[in-house]
Image (cartoon, rainbow, N blue to C red; front, side, top):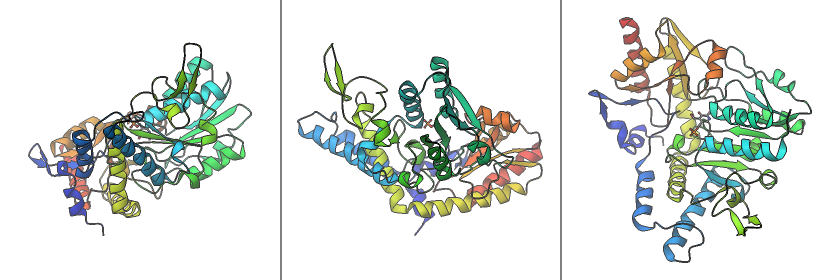
Length: 404
Ligand code: PLP
């Protein structure tokens, strides 16, 4: 049973007022709110369990280690990875992308080699490659898209050559909501003998992800976009690749033995986890995953799909509305502009009505260039949003339009 009122009670922040108006939180693609169970789990750990993980012989350290390693197993199950040694905890999607960009380029790429990304990438899947390009002279190739926000797979297929070393694309666009055909994208890469990485920041909160089914070589996502705490994320990588890559950072936890002459590294996944991990956040993330699983990820998908379709319909009917990203089956993100009202004006006026939306380039400036705009207003949904909230948004937009 998907009891939306009961679900909303798990998120006390949703009943607060802003400017004497009930909050309508539609900025979930930036970060989601946290249910009480996640906050309780983290508070309980700090109150009663807290000790540094691994290597500790004492009771608390072992208990904290158990929670941390159980969290790894929960993540493994959530994305159906074959083994916990392939689950690396990071600070978030951005760190996962930087890790692979740095380690993969160092070991696997030379000057003139190429990485393929898409035109709808978040800056975090563009800038790390540019940093490597500046260091090592690699080149970035870009998959184009059509007017609806659909990637051009025919063009993509033509981009491979003997210099292509990696493909790295978003599962879901954080601006357009397009769900990219990642299984097909990975298959095409593999047919050319090239591994592929998927940025799952906007997919894991919304629908079932199975990394074995996608067959991707790397997959990254963030905890805070799926009801978990900030500062924790995951990099999944196939063991065959992780084994080949050099460590990203050096320090404690990631070594087997150290002398001034020679250091050997820990086995996976610890080789990529230098320093004290955020073991309270990993427990928080695991609690968020169990919260999602309790409600049912397929129920969440269905609910959010209904919200998205309803929102697109309501907004389409508004005079002067321009919607960006109109591919069928798109995910829980709706980007728009109305007439010549600046996105910042629209966002500011909606805010005064208690409606939290995001405005600007959404960390996707190359996509804005492609669309020939400076930015959009973006409403994005989570499992706790309602059709009534979308009505508030649509009515709010109409009110702003009248003011102009
Ligand atoms: N990739 C996509 C598609 C995103 O939407 C985001 C965040 O908005 C990121 C990467 C970066 O995520 P984080 O800031 O959690 O590292």
